[in-house]
Length: 326
Ligand SMILES: NC(=O)c1ccc[n+]([C@@H]2O[C@H](COP(=O)([O-])OP(=O)(O)OC[C@H]3O[C@@H](n4cnc5c(N)ncnc54)[C@H](OP(=O)(O)O)[C@@H]3O)[C@@H](O)[C@H]2O)c1
Image 1 (cartoon, protein in one colour):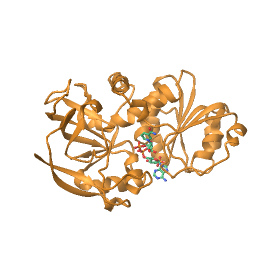
Image 2 (image 1 turned 30 degrees about the horizontal axis):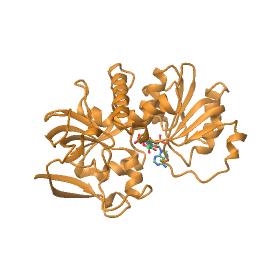
Image 3 (image 1 turned 135 degrees about the vertical axis):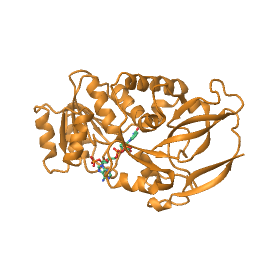
Image 4 (image 1 turned 60 degrees about the vertical axis):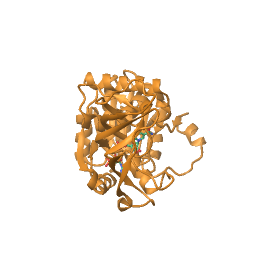
C-alpha cells in the first residue's frame, strides 16, 4: 500500500465542497498502472462537475487530466514500464490526486521534448482543438473561423491550429487585454464580446461574408449571436457552456438563419478506443513539435490551493491553461 492524497466531493456546490483526503492506495490491478502525478490539468469541465451542472454519483473525485511517471505496473500491461512518462485525459474521474491507479489503455507516453507541466496544460485542450478542426468541421485554407473565448485554454490552441490550417481566425474575448492575448495566440482579429455590438463587429471583420464555422464554448450568452455570424450553410459548433446552458429553441431557427448545421460534440467519444486516442495524441504531439500550437500556462496552483484555481477560472480572471501541482 502507498499513501496518496486526493480531492473528494460528497456534495456539489462552491469551491469549498472540494475536500482533500489521504488514503491507502492499493497496488495496481490487472491492466492498470500506478502513477505519481507531477502536473494536473484544470479544465472548465471540472467546474461543471463540481457545481453539479453535470452531476456525478457521490462521493467522487474530480479532474480528468494529469501527467506523471509510472511507479508500478499491474499484471497484463503490455507496453508500459516503471519510469515511463505518461499523460491522460480520460482515465476515469479523479485526476486531482498525487498518486492513482489508472488503466494502461488510457495512457499515452510523453515525447521527450514535452515537459510534464506543458503536457498537463495542453493535452485535454489540444485533443479538443484537434477533433474540432479535423473532424467536427474540417478547417481548410481560406475558411473564416470564429473562436469564442479565444484567450482561454482551449481557445488559444484552437485559434492557433485553425490559423495553421490556413483559415482567417476571428477571436472573441471578454476584455481588451484578453483580445491582445487572443491575437498573440493566432487570431487575425480579436473582438471584445462584452461590447453590445460584437455581432456586427464580427460580421464586419469577415468582410460581410460571415463565418464558415463558429466554435462556441460560451453557450447562453453567445449562442444567438453565433447563429447570426455563421454564413449560410455554415457550422455552429457548441462545445461548452461557460456562461450557462442554452435554453430550448425552435429548430426552424436554423433554417431562418441560413440552413445552418448545429452540433454539440465532446472530446471523449472522439477518443473512445486506444487506436483513436493514440492517433489523435500523435497529431497533437506533431502539432506541438512543429510549433503550430503552444502551451500557455496562465496560472499555477498547488493541490492545497485547488479552491483558488476554481475561483480564478469562474471569475474569468485567467487566460490560457491552469496547471495544478500535487
Ligand atoms: N466539448 C468538449 O469536448 C470540450 C472539451 C474541453 C473543453 N470544453 C469547453 O471549452 C471551454 C473552454 O474550456 P477551458 O478549460 O479552456 O476554459 P477557459 O476557456 O480557459 O475558461 C472559460 C472562459 O469562458 C469565458 N466565459 C464567458 N462567459 C463566462 C462566464 N459567464 N463564466 C465563466 N467564463 C466565461 C471566459 O473567457 P472571457 O473572459 O474571454 O469571456 C473564460 O475564461 C469550456 O466551456 C469547456 O467546457 C469542451
